Image (cartoon, rainbow, N blue to C red; front, side, top):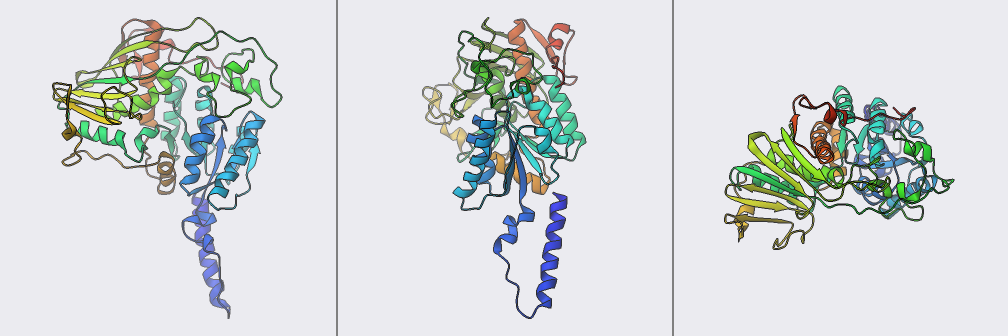
Length: 455
């Protein structure tokens, strides 16, 4: 970025000097100046061209109109080619001629390009840490899909690496930038302004994933580098059920239901809702002290993430949190004077008239006054689009809305909840030391052994 900014200054000075020396005025296209000047555009590489990359991340970056995709990378050559075509279409839809976009099968080649400022990582969870660490060490800014990392130990490594660098990393906890109603930010402002009184409890509702019998081995498609896709996880036979559909980029991939690659909805949706809960609780830099959980885990080996579950957590100030698949999908903040419920879905909770609703005690009495924006004493940062917030911070070098330290804490709460579900017994968590207290079995689950050569 510094190189590009200095080049911009040089171009402007040179153009001015040349124009002054000519008898006739120099006319330059308007695109060479201002926010859309080539030297002022952020050059981005996309790593992962699957469902989330094409449906969410690439459109978000493109619509911000501050950056240009110049490279795409995927281990599935069909998806890589589709990513390039999609990036070109995004430009054409805005009436802009696409830049040259190169396609890569190896992320190392993309990261080696000195003309790429930043990367967006939209891959399966088990690759998040390796890719983000490599990008940071290559001097790139990063937009990283949630959950931040697959294991807690990886989260510490990535947090420390970003902290020691001058790079910016934004995690895709986009409920912080939810538009157009900004209900998540508003709910957190109301709670932190005391609208529900003293906060006592938080209820989080997360869905579950279905399971299915294990499918047999299949021939590896010629377009997929399957061994590299497996990456740091244990070697396992190929079946489409384990990876992603070959005939659709929009269908939900199987790896989301395979515990080797994803811990299930406790980190999938949990990364969003724990983040919002911490935001509203004003506990973004800490975590629970006690927790106990239970979960149903299928015995098959492919679609084996958790089913029904319930986790109880205790936070500072004796705030109790319950995460349960039987709650409506969203977050309910409950104080000694009432509650506020927030969700993406306007029909998420019976009786809730919208995505943001509230009640005074008794809890069946509607209380729209709790949602009156007048008199809010805590104002949180405003953002209507998460990718745009990231790009703006790449220019300003300010901290984005979901930085690595905050994202690590919300991800950690998800992971220790999964460990509690696995062990099914009470656990004590030292949020400062980031270890379970006197519990070797639980602490061993904070990391994994990576498969060579992907350690």
